[in-house]
Length: 117
Image (cartoon, rainbow, N blue to C red):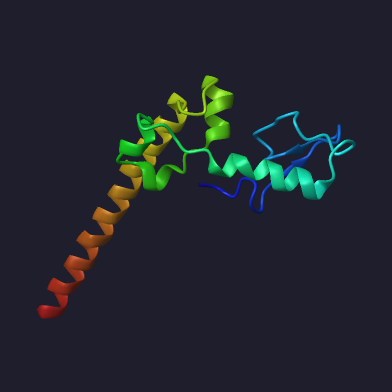
């Protein structure tokens, strides 16, 4: 989980407290709520858990992807459905990092062989 409602939040130009800059809700107008009460109530968002069938749970690229519920909502209209672009980017990052790691390991192996000679 990201820093949503922990260290990250946004008060927009209309005076609404939002969980983050991407996730905009109109539930906490600070003209009617005290910041303290709005902040306490908005914490319920941190307690929302992904559904069991959430695609990202089983994804081999999860560790390099950092899925974002707000980004999912913006791209697909559903917090539990990641956008294709995010998935494609994670796969590409994985492939590029794998190439770099392979090259580094290959070079290290070559250096070890040179030292033996």
